[in-house]
Every structure is written in structure tokens, then in C-alpha cells.
Length: 480
Image (tube, rainbow, N blue to C red):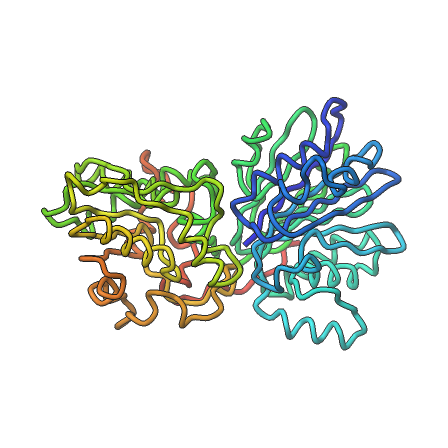
């Protein structure tokens, strides 16, 4: 899972493009914390810089990377990337954007997604003489496009079309080549990507919260299977070049990855999570002994709001969240996740002096690292009863579309699956809680319906593979 941004200055003369690119890239920090990078180009110059860690670390005002980006005279295009690794380690060589130099200038490429058949395709390309510098899937896409376009910008559109038709993968991607920006999204619409405008500039980003951050106006989402070609004169071409028989938007995006102030294909994330909490209380109501509900901040705030509304129980915060710690799930290894969970939350003193039986709400459990620690700390702090409610279904299957869960045996809920369902009583005993309740898959789909009765995202158009094992991919067909 990653964050992508791109901007073309266009007719605007007042925008400082490097600052716009930096602010936009920082707006995707929640999507990846291992690496960050930016690339900028003008009619005569090009610069790409990337590093390990947060955007503010790699591109602080004092660092040479930021000065190099700003040194490009009269920049016309910029792209930024934040990375959470699913292919390749955290080394800078695997960071994005990836670049190559062709006979027609520099190309820079970034993507959010994954290629299930990465190793097979890589081996085939190497047998044809293609050389790789990293283990990253985005580099493979860049080299694949360069090979099929013969390194010429005029061949890029046909190469992207061929990639969509031939390679089963997920991607929200941006390619910068000379004076053109090619923006495209996989035919299944699995990962988010949107378009905005600001003072004549055209902006592309993984989430709408980025547009809000930079003061841009939301235009629309990039459509599944769509290719957009933009230049400093604006969007030049836009067409759907490949169509899937069935869409497969990532349901876990709505539960976890996307920020609550974002909208993904017309569905506001925040209100969706509140509805999930409300539906969860209807499906798995708290016992009468529960005196109040508390969230795991910030991830569980909106789910807990829904739980409180549906149960008429008061909300009382018992956990303090350290705003300077990142998201533990997207740390690259288990040691870092455990260290992060240890320092990320602390118990507010005397939280259970008056009430000691409570319900705890959170958005998801993947490996269980955070919840195990919170339960232990709450017990030590005086909690007599802990009833945990999770505003998403049990995560029981490896994701092959861009979420780093390759080792299925490490998924918390997997050992407790019986007849396709999580044995919640057994899982609660493992965690040390008095009860555990997950939202059902059908309940989650029902929450896609907005309060006004509309369905911006249809239940049949989401991927639920990590929750129920259904195949996320279907056939695609070219569009003339």
C-alpha cells in the first residue's frame, strides 16, 4: 500500500510547484512510512530524489534532497510517493519514483498496488535482457512499459493498454515522460485515485484528503481502466482503454487505509465507518454489564461513535494516542510493530476507578499486535470486563492485491476459522477479552449504502478476499 501524487503547473504562474508537491505528498503519509520520494521536470531539466522514512525527514528544508528538487528551473510537472512495502524491502533502491533514461529523455514512474505474478514476469523480462535495479513491482511496470513502447513517448499509450490487457495486477499509477503525464488505474478499480484543480494546475492523488490539504477543488475519481494524458495545457486525452467484467474495489481501504476525511469513488469514508459501528452493535450487541464504550484512537474513533449511538452508552476515552508514532500495521517487520504498539498508546490514569466494565471499539485486527497489548494494560489498570468490537470482518486470508499479509499463519483470526466463520469465543480467550464481535461481511456491504439511500459503491463491486477468500480478479476486455 502506498500513496501517489502528481501535479502539472499548467497556466498558473503563482504556484511554487515543489512546495505544492511536498504538501501533497505529506498528505499521503498515512499510506506509507518506510520510504518517500519526489521527481520534478521542466522543459530542460529533471531531478528525482528519495530516501528512507517520512516525507518530512527526506525533504526537510535543510536537506540537500529538498534543495535539489527546488533547483529545477521553471518546473512544469512533479510527482511524489510514500511507500509501505509489499514488494522489495525498505532499502532506498526499492523506493519510488523509479526512473529510467531513454533516447527521448527521463521517465519517472510511481504506483500504488501489487503484481501477484511479479516473480514470473520478472524472470521472463530478464530472459529478454531487461535489467532490474530493485525488487519493486513499480520498477517492473516502468521497464515493461519502456520495453513495449520502445522507449518512445508516442508508444506509451499502446504499451499501457497492452499492460492492462495482459498483466493481472492492481495499480493506481502515474508516469512522467518529457512533457506528458500518463495517469491510469487498473480495470478493477481496486485502489483509489482522484483528480483536482488548483489555480490552473491539475493534481492527481491517491485520496481526496490530499486535495483538501493543498486547497484544490475535487473534480472526479479516475475511472477503473481509464488512461488520462495530461500536459501543461491541461488534460489532453481521457478514455477507458480496458474494462473488467466485474469491479473489485478494496473493502479494506474503507475500513483502514483511507483517511476518514477522504471519499473513495463517491463513498465518504468517515460516515461509512460510523455506519459500520452502528451495524456492529445491532449484530453483536454489548451485554448489559457494559457501562461505557472507548475507542482505540484514532483508528477506532468513528466505529466507536457508531457503537455508542446504537447502544446509547456513553463514550469515555481511556487511551492516549501518541500523535508522533506512525501506524503499526504498516511497519515492515513484527519487532517494529510490537515496539510501535508499546509506545503508541498509554492508559489514562484512573480510567476504571468509577466504571470498570467497558466496550472497546476498533476498525480491524490483522495480526493482533496492538489489541493484545491494550488488553493486558487495561487489565493491569483495573478493567474487570473488556468487550471488544471490531468494525470489519475477521481478516483471514492473504491479500494478493497490495496489502502486506503474505504469511497467513500470522493473521490473528486465521486459527479460529470454522466453517468459514471466526470462532469469536475462542478468539476472545486468546486475546484475554470477555467477548469479541466482528462485523459480518454482509453487514459491511450494507453499510456502503448512504443515509440518503444511495449506493455510490455497489456491494457486488468490492473485493472481500481477505475476509472470505473470494477471488478478487475476473476477466478483462480491451475497449476500442
